Image (cartoon, rainbow, N blue to C red; front, side, top):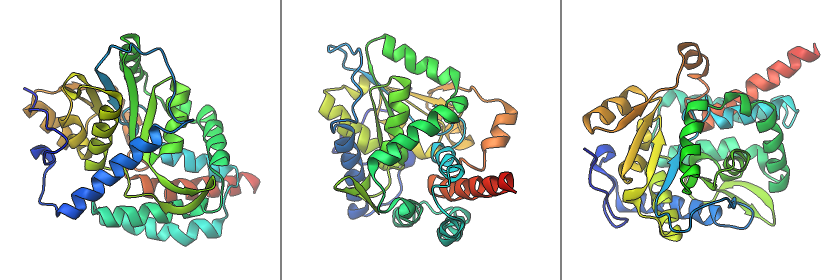
Length: 309
């Protein structure tokens, strides 16, 4: 059976709990609140046909849940093919990203550092420009990576008059583009620092990963008057066990081996829409958001050079 739903004041669910200092937990909560703040800002919320009396909602991870592979990887490839950055820029931080991926670190500071290095290429660029490019890349390539089975699950919640949110470590601007194109309520994502509509190249708090996703869901649920025990959450990754554990209906979609074992031991529903060739093709790009960005840029840049040659 499902585990009891913790309140926002509780410690993180035991399913994914390790000993964490209070300041680290505070930073996860900071990331969650920052994401909820951004999602509630004008221009981010997608107004849809939602039943105002519905107190349940659905929260979907993106990478390998809604979309095959990593959304940030696909976006990076699209930017590289549009010559958005140079080979020198890729080389400058690509090596750092490879080291991060190979280390397999889940440390919050390491992840923040790697993500900031990956985001450094947008420093000085406008939010409007990146959002426009996100729409272009989504329509050009990402739409072909969507997973029909998961989209049908999301549509079922929309048909029931419920809010449907994406929850992802991908930058909130790109996540919002995806949500808008799919007709969803909105998106909770990693928040990059912006001043006067221009990216500074730094994060506004930690990346939205692991426990931070759970805190973001709690924060948006409080803002929207949602009952988490009446909500659903969907993900493929064991990193999202904290998010899955705080809702009444957790569903493992295309689960990794750790999540699959946890789902079975807790009587969670499991849905698998994968095909073997797709898993092999997208396994590496989906390894990590920051690493996927560097790898995507390298592949896109090299591909564009090959075509020119």
